[in-house]
Length: 202
Image (cartoon, rainbow, N blue to C red; front, side):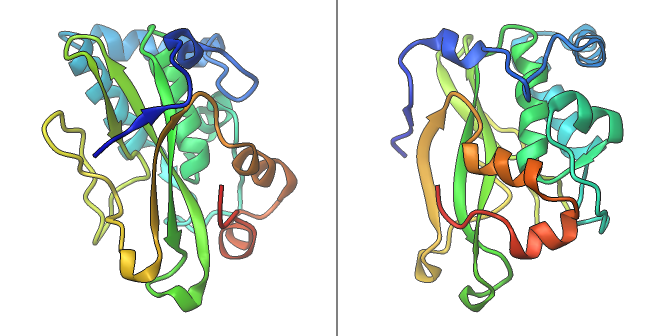
């Protein structure tokens, strides 16, 4: 798999923004706790990934209408769709100097193409100790979804089904895609947004 980076400057993947607000006290406090419980860089990334995957509910899974966007907001309410959860994971890792980017897939909304398509967000982090980027998906596991953190093979939430014209975009972006942030900010009902308002292409 030939994954490329939007930027050759690793510092671009450490930037703080409005939605990746890693200086917020709740973000720094949590990253400090996760860091203190970790034995090394890889362990910290794994622990942080598993926190966001398991402790932050996916809005659709709990049928919540609430929409969250910024990392601190996602952490406060402990819920969000994949776009929001990827913001939180990026903020927690960047707060400890781990370069973290955003990756995307184009998936069917339901099980088949007639349900339409949507863009799905996940993350990648540059792991200094192994000298390469690793992708992982903190969407949240449930029946039929078993994403894991792995250095040896990707274990993402959704396998790409080319026969359904699904796409794995093999680029690591510096910031969240503007369409994903726009949809979070312009909608007021997460369930309606999930079914009708998600972007279908980058």
